[in-house]
Image 1 (tube, rainbow, N blue to C red):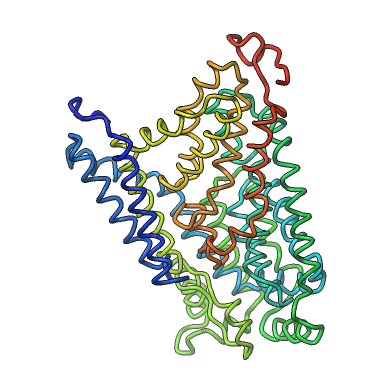
Image 2 (cartoon, rainbow, N blue to C red; image 1 turned 90 degrees about the vertical axis):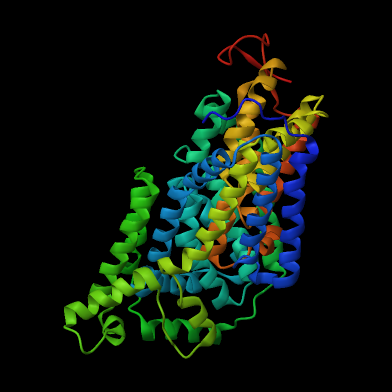
Length: 493
């Protein structure tokens, strides 16, 4: 979209002011509202910070109409994610009703031991995400069940969420069928499988360290649930649901569609509808108990599953903690998360359109003289873009476009940039509450990113390890000679 050519270049103060206002208001929001800050206060903070950006844009010569168009366009970029979110809400509801999630919890309680629960959760999510290429789908299925198992074993749901996010983003990052894994080399100009091979040097050691930390935490927190508690939960699940391996079929179908690269939105929504059908077939007593006795039996069943799709699943088992776990889902439960994403995308769109983000990044680049500082500044830029634009894809595309020429000028192979975009962009996105990924994980796992961020060991270690590698010159590949394409021979720095 073209804009007025008479606009002024923003100053670094211009670029910093909306961010300073946002950080202040978000901090104040957390102080005043605590864990409820994401249910309205943070959205207001994003609106106010967007207003500061708009004022700066108007001051610098932009018209309201073009800023408004940029906001609308920015918000539209999140619509695909919002469709997936609504579908995930529906899926969680019907998978609770169908017995899929209760069965996963039941079997998890039988086989998972508190001592190695966190490490096993991380590894399980890593394997699933590597196979299907989606951290979101992994969290909405295996992740939801693991949070339930954690409650049954007396383990911390916050640390469990950190393990789930760590494993899901490792698998997502390393999977050749992941969108971000394909996007990063496309932006940087490297080959997909060269990119994955180059990532192993920072990603695999980070995952090993994370698993060690989860194992240490697990061995030092034995859990508070004894055998009688686990038996009580298992008996309650069997009392209210038909527990069987057949209940896991919707999960297997969903994973098969994901592996076959069926787009996420239809995959998740089909999974939700399959869960609804499974509930009618395999949980007839439960569905009948929830049905309106005045309606025709078929219509009554239809109303139950229809209500679950939009309003979620509600049950009273007599166990308060189990009820908290088994009550949830429904599209309506995702409205707040969608509101947060909507607000954040508007803020990011304003800053990008009026040049504030570009100016902010240029300020960071001033000190990037060495290869180590260049890679570090790229990681910092990706993280800042995740904060400012609230979108994982923008944190890859924008820094990738801005740094590509500089990497080429310094004779650095494109795989260095593509790996760094993932080290700094892909895996830091779920740590930010208003980022689409952070908001999604909060909505699905019901744990605030500000809480689980301290335990998302993989997501914390990987960027730090990448920076250490950069300054030590470990696996930093150079072009030989610098002006040849990457298909030429490369050598280790």
